[in-house]
Amino acid sequence: MTTAPTLHHRRTTCRGCGSTTLAPFLHLGEQALANALLRSPAEFATERRFPLEVVLCTQCGLVQLVDVIAPEVLFSNYLYVTGTSDTMKVHNAEYAETICKLLGLGPNDLVVEAASNDGSLLAKFKTHGVRVLGVEPATNIAAQANSAGITTANEFFSGASAKSLRAQYGAAAAVIANNVLAHVDEPVKFLAAAKAFLRPGGIVSVEAPYIEEFVEHNEYDTVYHEHLCYFSISALMVIAERAGLRIFRVDRKPVHGGSIRMYAKSAEEAREHAPAVVELARAERGKGYTSLARMQALAKASAKQRSDLVALLERLKREGKTLGAYGAPAKGNTLLQYCGIGTDLVPFTVDKSPLKIGLFTPGMHLPVYAADELAKRRPDYCLILAWNFADEIMRQQAAYRELGGRFIVPIPTPRIV
Image (tube, rainbow, N blue to C red; front, side, top):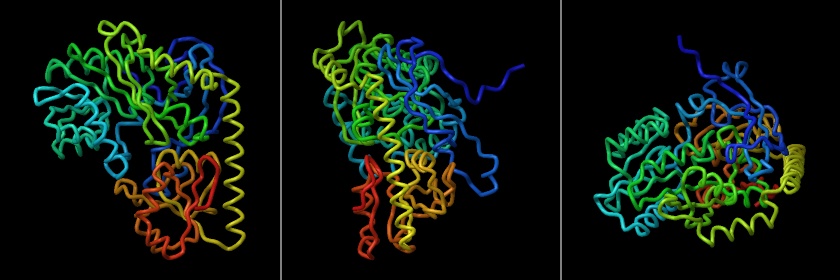
């Protein structure tokens, strides 16, 4: 008899180094899963909530969550697709070009993407004539990718899947993981699986939100149950080492509020991390990005942002102003729940993704309408929940602005633009 997987458990050891020296510093309360949008009000009463607490490993400096939700619950049916953002389309084209030029890839080379979503990034590699393979656990999105011509295996990326897929498709020139390593409860095993997929001379490239932006820009809303880790280069070095990899390059990228892209080779081909990478790690330690005191300061800044934002929205409501929101992203749902912003303050939000339209945000239950509803409903102020795409959103909503609408950007501190 098989037992059902545990829906929720709490870790007691660090994902990076295995130590037990985990110091809590930020508690965002009991929250509904940030991407689990609801289909009808009938589901509100049975919605489950889980603790959302951030800790620091004082041994290796990895910032992480201790509350773990079963990945089958989080990712088997998913509502985030990478192809809806113009910003990400440009970013993906640059990513593919960089990897192809770095390795001199051609039609006989294979690029594998773990957690490949709708295949938008791999599609850019195909334009360079490279063979591609996606590995995507969400059944609905894997089907979407396959129908778009991106060969995609509908499964979780793991040591076992890497072995079987390598046997079927051949060894990879590059294994890329774009905003997925933070979602993995065992990142060392994940990177070891990526390494096992490589041909000689191949690389692993990982992109993830960076701890510097998280701390300096008060990006607490990037915390949700899917994001189990918040990476510094120092912590990534430890994880890579344990997986048998060495980092030879790190690029800074502006997407998702500020990210880093790590490039790594097998330890058999690169005995040490590159000197420039070691220097970056030294510099971030000097800025306190691996220290508990700096993380505790972030927690205080987050509490102030919450009180300032709620005060602003309540003042506008007292003045008779109407409010709406743009976006139903995971980060926005964390922000709404942490700040306690419900339909009494912000009656609705809008979104471009057809997968979200007609649903309700988790926790606070804002109805999600199509993006063109913003200009039709004409609230006086629009809270941009997808603030990392604020410039793109404000350009797209020119009609709303021409009608007198104004925007509120909540992070790092609330401001009207």
